[in-house]
Amino acid sequence: MRSTRPVSYAEHGMVATAHYLGTGAALDVLKEGGTAVDAAICAAATLSVVLPHMIGIGGDAFWLIHDARSNSLSALNGSGTCGRNISLNDYQGLDAIPHRGPRAAITVPGAVDSWGLAHARFGTLPLSRLLEPAIRYAREGVAVTQDISQWIADDADVFRQDPGSADIFLKNGQAYRPGERLKQTALADTLEGIARHGTRHFYEQTAHSIVDYLKQQGGLLTIADFQQYHAKWVAPISTSYRDVQVYQVPPPSQGIAGLLILNFLNGIDFSGIKYDSPEYYNAMIQAIKWAFNKRDRYLTDPDFYNIPIEKLLDPALANAERDEWLNDTQRTHENRAGGSDTTFISIADRYGNAVGLVQSLYFDFGACVTDPGSGVLMQNRGSFFSLQPDHPNVLKAGKQSASTLMSGMAFKNGKPFMVYGTQGGEVQPQTQTSVLTRVVDFGLNVQQAIDAPRVLYGRSWGDDGNRLLLESAVPASTFTALQGQGHPAESAQWPYPRMGTAQAVRLPGPWSAFFEGGADPRGEGIALGF
View 1 (tube, one colour):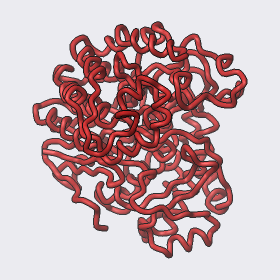
View 2 (cartoon, helix red, strand yellow):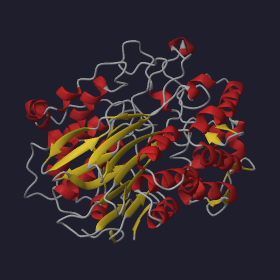
View 3 (cartoon, one colour):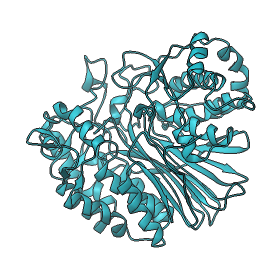
């Protein structure tokens, strides 16, 4: 297939992010000799300024990091915990935790501490260098893009309810227009403090300003919640798919859902069919339903609930249930609506290191609560907690919520093959699978795999129930065949942003001597190498 843009090839390193300024800043770090982790921190900080609806230092992060020297893969959980003094009693009489406002900002931001852990183990350049582009963009201002202008307009009414947010993200009470300059001087000061004093400065000092503001607005987090929080190294989880070994971050990340989908598809022969055929999409749809059924029965903080990961990822489970699901397209799984705004950073360096970093505020602009003293926009990840006492993901003090965030990395012959991921809440395991299978099963390059029309099963924020969307670039015959099988497929104009904005990097190997990068036409990203 012909892609929307050429795949990026380079010999010494590759960066793919969801915004061109983030990619450019991270690429400069690689050119200066920094590692993939150095570049990922630079990208995440920069995107926190130039892509404020999707990522920020008030949010969470999950990492997969391959270290070439030790030939090892590490996973890092930078998901924040619920405040220590917060309980179900604080939401008595409600059916769900509010999605917006100070009562939604009930988990500690974990991303910044994860930056510190990753940098201490795998970084080489000073933190001050890595945060320099973000500080400059925050202080001097950055051009508002078409996408950001629209997202601000969509959330303007919520911003008007929060003085801190309104002062930063609205201009004379209205959304910034494309091409206007957005400055975030308080955030620049905060980033300078982190650059000068280290990432724990955010939890020991910046936290005072954040907590004071939240308290004024009716929030519940405390200084102790910040000071006691620490990101943590965890063991990756994995499964085999065809001739690759695929890794994800363990729960509370929903990475297990992506692995379950692959286990289901691994028993289906795609040879002789096309990547946009009804046979492919039927298998994908039923695999997604099956995987989400398993995910939603268990996904939560494993420190609070026993998740049978080994049993779930045993191929025997998918083998035993595959035919039943394939033969009944009427079987469904009602998903709980969730946020969709996240960003994925894919980087590989000249030393053989590779990083997949996913970072998020959960909903667009998170809780829409911004501390004016620090410029920190708070996430609303805690709003995904259940208020049902018997639910695995029920709210509890000190607990991490089940998270839509996931980071994908595939290996061949014991070496990194591809780093891939996307934003999009429920979309993430679906789009990750779409990208991987288009490369592994159908021989597309990463840009073609990202461009290829996708399916979206489930319920996004604002939907009353599950929907089955298929981008209109698929052949009409595919729609007809799927509807004939009983799938309620709706057409979504391609490229459709709700399908996620994916990034991917394929590393050199027998298939090519060069790094190969791709970024999604559904967003504002770009892949660049040198």
